[in-house]
Image (cartoon, rainbow, N blue to C red; front, top):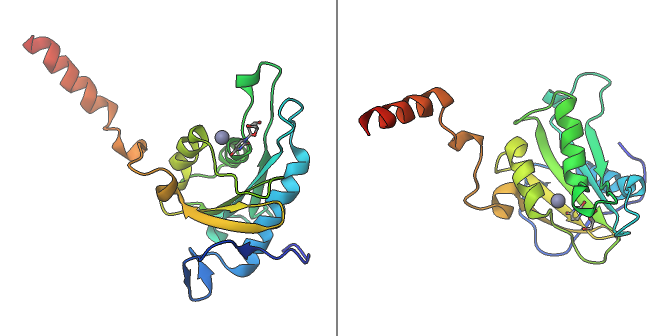
Length: 182
Ligand SMILES: O=c1ccn([C@H]2C[C@H](O)[C@@H](CO)O2)c(=O)[nH]1
Ligand SMILES: [Zn+2]
């Protein structure tokens, strides 16, 4: 755990149950909040100068001994502007290539240098949904550590995910049948 005086403060009423917010303890929230704020320092954003840090909290069961429980990322821009990548996708890509998958993630946190809260862009919401599922909370921090929280499902209602795709074999057979029947 980070030993700091960072103190996350909810900016609106948050759903609390047994002292947890969407299953996340105060100590965990302090840790992912501090880590996403720190991760901003690693951003490469010479074009926008808009630094974003993201952190992903893994379930205990998803981490082997000695491995970090929190994975971070920051935005990485490019002279060809649309090629740049957001902090959330950098963090999640790092987690995925480290072997993490759906079911491993307990929470996400995002921070910018703004007084307001930055929520993941549409592309990141879709990207994260694949690996988070719908119930994982996403904490959005202001630069002072105030936060709001929404679940993945709240940020991306009626979402399209891997569970919607039928097996390819099934689609192939249906399409072959359709071609035969034409
Ligand atoms: O949730 C967000 C929103 C924006 N950005 C980045 C993309 C770009 O580098 C900069 C300005 O949009 O901020 C993120 O990393 N995450
Ligand atoms: Zn994004």
